[in-house]
Image 1 (spheres, rainbow, N blue to C red):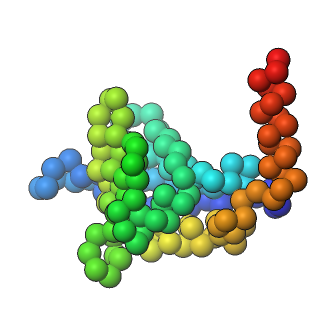
Image 2 (image 1 turned 30 degrees about the vertical axis):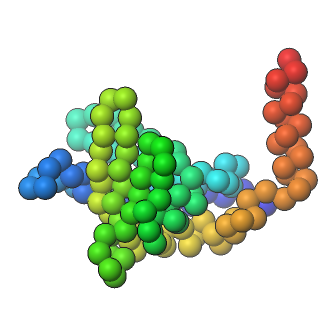
Length: 139
């Protein structure tokens, strides 16, 4: 497996109310060492950046229909897949973000070229990860 990182950068709208939203910068990251996860780092004005980690497959599923059962819900907006809504739920509050779909699709395509979806771990890598987990728990 290759050892490089896929990164992206886009602007999303943080929706405060139906009448009010503001743009925030978001950095995207994918690392083969954590092949099932994508990282979104939100740069909020006046606050420290906030990073959310969730399943790459959840992002992919949310592009074509409603997806998510826990703290992250994603769904397309409109019929032409021009935008995607991402709902984040935390003990500190909820956030609704709207993103253009095109940069998310391009980001996922780049992750898929690095580690194809469904081929995240080979049998040998899975055995090595399982051995690491078991040795941590044995101590």
